[in-house]
Image: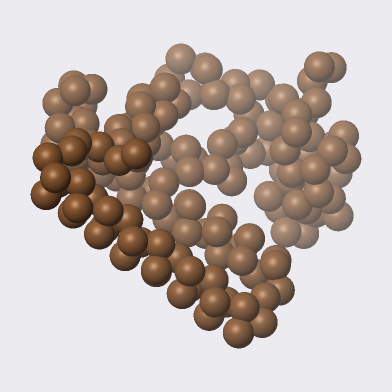
Length: 153
């Protein structure tokens, strides 16, 4: 891959700020306790930064595999304490990862919704659709539990 990375420079003063595929970002080395994390370099402005800089993983000392497992269990509805027991981790670490992922998702979704340039009416319709779907799913789960079914279909 000739040392180039599909990443953008996080430096707001850089002429290539936020632009992917400009060829200005390369791996400059590694860092961390066991030197497994990539340190990137912008040739346009000279800034060095972590490969995880703009992700939910930035500044977390937990391995990416453990973070993926935590998020997977959270998505499946497994509680924080149960996830911590399964992964043999501290519950505070599990909670921190989940909260960080939640904040990152909210930031990404807000950016996506803003970039859609929807009118107030369109946003209201979208919100109504989501709310109605949530109510319908809750009623469906309630009906399934009353009928003795487990899971959703």
